[in-house]
Image 1: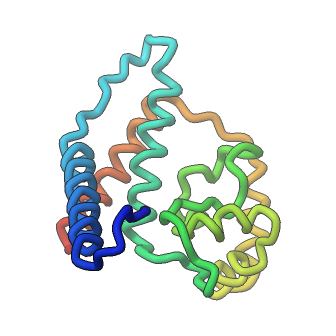
Image 2 (image 1 turned 135 degrees about the horizontal axis):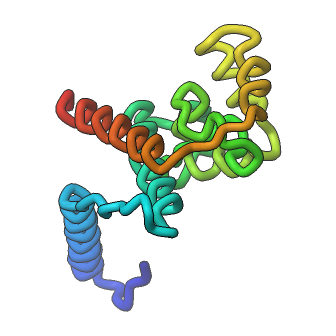
Length: 170
């Protein structure tokens, strides 16, 4: 944000105006997300599977961010939005894609860097679930799993219920 004046009072007014627009924007977005209506998914449609995946991903990630609330591998470098970070890549195996034991909240910086260096996340997982958990999950990760549209919608509903439960606790 740049200022066109050297007058401190005018700068303060500009900052307040900018902050107010940011708060209004966040409030509008939050209201929009609360009013979000689920897309009716016709299982006979050719777009049903991608829509069901999207719906399950949306609620799963929302739950993870609400559950953890902070980056699970904090350091001085933490920055960016909180993201749902999978312990193993979802592109190489779908079996654990919606398993909340291997999905954690991380800031953007750590989520992007853990693809190259998993030590901090692996250490966190070992502390949380005990030694050997990382290796057991790695074996499960490569198992073949095929989801149906009905299963995906059930997963989405399960995570949606968990989200509502967490929001009611606040």
